[in-house]
Image 1: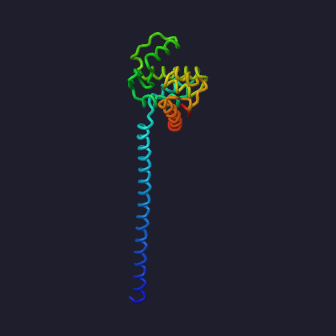
Image 2: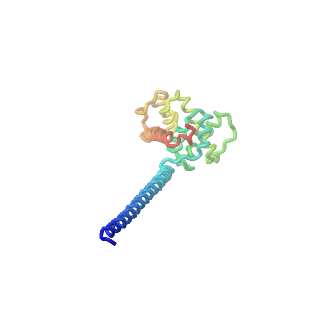
Length: 210
């Protein structure tokens, strides 16, 4: 074999070796890229899952079927009902020191008023622990307060928290936030208003807005 032929053969072997090396590098790069994409997809999926779990704690929603039904039946926005439940009980069945019970913290006295206004006659105090009945009574009372105070939502929410008598003394249907004399009630109205927007944003489908 001549020196020239030997050189050409060595060059071809070097070129083949270089091509294989470049092929391996391209394959490695592609594998790394695909791995990174897969990892990113997993991270994003887990992030959404984490967000959902956090929302279940910070902005819970339960009994949305009952809320939707009562919203339609009573003409009270579903996001408002959800926000009131959040402010009253964080969607937990409980009893206050004043005797208010259930998700919407309805007192037995208020329940008796609702029973009278609605023409019912079968109310029992233990009924307020039933989510369906409690939401039905609470939504009825919200509708009643909105009508009583000429659709003034601030007045209706203030009355839900502090009572009709206090709201009537503070301005009734003309009530503005600055007229509310109880700091707790002002905070309550602000909280419900804020949470209402959040429920509408995060649970539009569940609450029947989509």
